[in-house]
Length: 305
Length: 235
Image 1: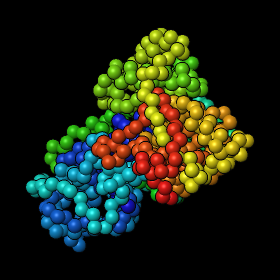
Image 2 (image 1 turned 180 degrees about the vertical axis):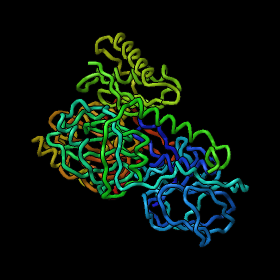
Image 3 (image 1 turned 135 degrees about the vertical axis):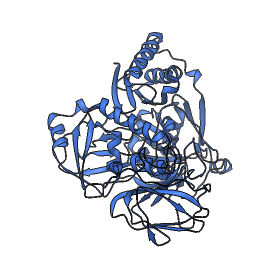
């Protein structure tokens, strides 16, 4: 599945409209940065591949995220790097070998019609992108032809390879106090398995369930990162396309920057939780946003890559 | 019962009561307005829902403690001004929604009647005889959670949700009432259909008819009137 995405439309939750946007801010941020875009510029989020696209005009593009063995006109091209495409060039990616979501950014961004200032596709809401749906074979994506720019890759320390086990740092927020010490211990001690019933709304985790979890609440606002625990005792981590209100109790929320790792985890992969703090989570989020919102000086990292 | 809790990296939630009623609704609606005005560009969104509201802020423009203080100040002001529940409902718009209650669009009307021990016509009279308030928007864009449904009609939601509820379906579940803006899966009891567009995608940005605080009345219409108003009998 391929979706037009950007950093989302966060101001309309009071209307029941999800924030939406790319799931992996790190990989999407790098793909955009490598072509001198910012996170507000729309790119493609390709889940699992395969995927092929023909360029209708010469431009610079960049790839980051899941490993899809990308080829341009038959020749391998590096992931986490920017490249030049000529008019008529064919870009092809295979089924992802490692990770789940691959990002393809074009210099100047994809120019579909914004809705509330965002081109992010929320399929459940039929908003953004092309008619609010995943791309179909034959779709044409508007973009602006760009002159050749200096090409570079992401510096080595930023390139991610996606482990089969991840640890999510949890802020003990929301209804953490309503959960017993047994509930908390169970959450923080086991390796959950990522359920195949996961999507852009929420990642479901399978493991030893918590018994007798707190009952449902009067519905309240919920946001990406929240860890809901419904009556079956198995946690659900809410993702970008989640509903805007909900009644399940929440045992906390995951660091925003750790949702990037969860977005690349595959069904069956191990997911652990460890306790963190709001201050640290916010500091990391602010640092990430500041980094990607400031366009790169050269077409790459701050030290050439 | 005033309480502020962390609810995410970019949000704080203010709880005003344990349960919801029209007095809490008035407080929530006034606070939303005040926080938006006072918060300015620091505030990205304010999401009201029943007894609480959540402020989403921009962590690049302000910090958590600043928003916490803003919330405390605004809440203090609104509670201080609260005249004790004598709220002015007149300031919220009254929306009249036509509803066709015909059996071909009301698959659960019979079950609700059975549950209430009354006839389907009496269910319609009760449902259309009450005035509802919008307590929250969510689940889908433009989906308004309304309440409260008259006591006898409070049949719980279905055990197994339907894979597809047609757009415009008028639904009740427990004390809640709603109209589905779009076709989607859903577990509420369907008792009629409304021809009015609640989330208008033909506009950009889409227009949303109902807002938290609004007053809503359902007005029974016949089949012909329903179709004349643009209602669809498909599905």
